[in-house]
Image (cartoon, one colour):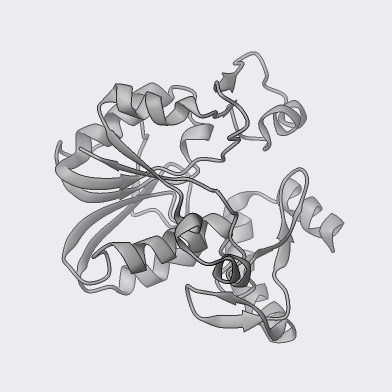
Length: 254
């Protein structure tokens, strides 16, 4: 199964994968029913989660029901337990909206919810993150998760995110993390998809962020809280929800 999933991820374009997932998801969920792992996003439990990864695949990370990964479940728990996201009115801008969140956030009556991306079929507004068509100080909350590693000029993208965020607003800007690396690595001369996958972890990534990512956000003008939210949960909860211990949530404000 691992080889099959790896082949699918690396050969089928993401927009097509999104459409196909709506058909396949109910079938897989039915056959994997159990009590070992729980997806906190929909509270459904399974005997196991699916493997996932473009390079080295990780076991028990992809929820069969919501298609959430570790980072999605971590963010959901943080929003639910530590913020008023689900209860108070917010104007929200969501970049490259994830399937695990898209319909659920759309249904929340307390949110004025806008999605944006250049290529996603789930985007309300097709926009370049480096040149956003939104007013300054417009959004209370911004989600831009696992996007910046795709952007050649991430400095400009960060500046635009800061510009459209309201003073006092919250931006959660997750990236693939290699916390063993102090300094971010990028090399614009690497363009071959296979070489990018080998070096950057995915065929369409242009850098690997290190610990200096948080300081770069600060240099742009964000206030950054490095939230190790798995450290606030029990070991049993981390295992039950299939989270990645030690993953840091970059919770940014203006």
